[in-house]
Length: 259
Ligand code: DGL
Image 1: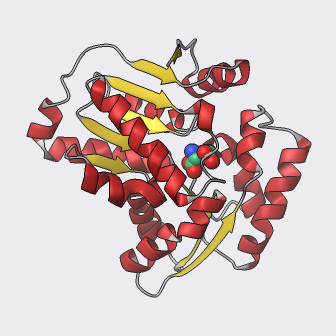
Image 2: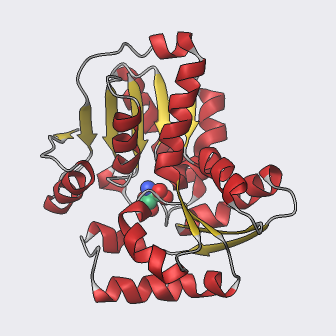
């Protein structure tokens, strides 16, 4: 089974993309709603929560882990890979590879949580993938609560998005990485505000597409995932807004099991 975890519901954008790109592969999802957001926490805390999430998924039969959270991917991936023998995928490298290739001018913007931006992981990997590129990062801490409040198309959200994107627009970026699992839900607000010529890179889609390619190239790994079986979605807390966002992402009624 493919074990996917996130600090909350945002990672369901990754789970949904995995479901679409790899139909038939069973998914075990864990959204750590009780401890969300991770983006405002220290690296040590994010690593500890991530470690517990991996253990939970492994105990329930996951044989491959996807860290469907940019914040956890940026600070915990290396440590988790050292501690667990199971293959661990993250959402940052696939988005970096796509952005490095898509950008014509080499002027690339990244938006994410405070912890993701502080880790500078996107910047580091983009410079490796595309030497000489200029990376402009912007933490957008208000966007996660706005998405979780369901304010996807409110005037206030549009104003805040414009305010956050302003410095990136000034830098004439031609590519913008949506470096947070919640931001794909705001893509239709972000695109007109950053300008239609700027290419948006959705880290959720990039991660699912990378996983698909890896499984196509690695039959042993693909077989270890036992095609067939039911997808399960676990959450560490269940609220009405979580239920609503989950159903917005999946476009269908969702059963979320409380753990
Ligand atoms: N899932 C987180 C991310 O992708 C956003 C929410 C949080 O801060 O926990 O960075």
